[in-house]
Structures are given as structure tokens and as C-alpha cells.
Length: 155
Image (cartoon, rainbow, N blue to C red; front, side, top):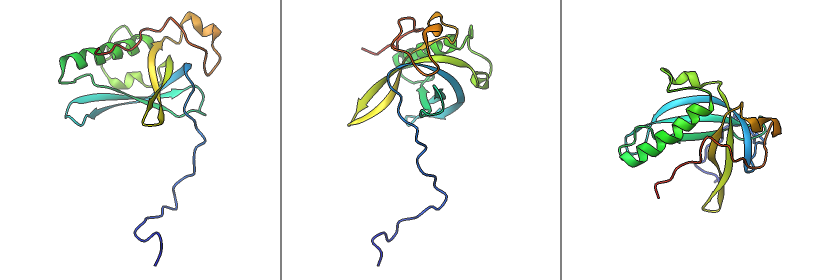
């Protein structure tokens, strides 16, 4: 009898990508994907997949509960999403979500520590054309005060 009875082995599973969680800072970013999803509570939401810096970092997925059933949560999510829209150079919401794909911006990144794990946390959005761009390298710079906005909170 095997010590692994009932465990499936997948021959096609790749080894680690070597990507890492990014350090806090400001990162050049590109929107790779945007999808409409349903939350566990049944509300519609959007997810946006960002490429952070060069390809040596993990991509980051952010959730925007734009149609949240709680009016305060909906307002906050809509404010945050509006900051994203402005940072990618749009003057308003596009007709199609696919218009976001390929748009560039700079993300202000920090860490969120939960249950002994470190997660990437987006603190704000900057335009790719921001005047601080000249001070940035391709991957990150130390903090910036010109973010489109820090994320609002309920409290």
C-alpha cells in the first residue's frame, strides 16, 4: 500500500515560475485582463489583472465590487475604479471593458499581512505620464505623493 493512496499526480504541472511578491514601491504596470465575475454574495464585480514591473514579478488581480448591494461599499469601489480609469488616461467609463486591455499606468504598491502571509496591496494609481516617471526605473521607485488617490476606507 502506498503512502499516497488516493492522491493524483499530474505529469503536466510546471515547476515554479520563479516570480516573487513585489516590494513596496511604485511599479510600471499594464492591464492584461478584465473580467466580469459574480461575488460569493451574488453581486456582479470586475477583476483586473495587472502586470507589475517586468515579468519577474507575480501578476496582481484586483477586485472591484462596482455593483455591490451595500451602497457605501459600492460608492467606495466606484471611487477606486474611477481612480483607475483616470490613471489609464480615460475621461470616463468606456463602452466595453476590453478597452482597458493594454492600457498602462503606475501602481503604488504596499504589503498586506494576513495570517502570516504577505499579499500585494494596491494603495493608489498614477498615470504613466506622471511627472515622477522620469525618476522611476522600469520596475519601482520609493513612494510617491502624486497618486491619483489612496484607496478610501469605510471607517
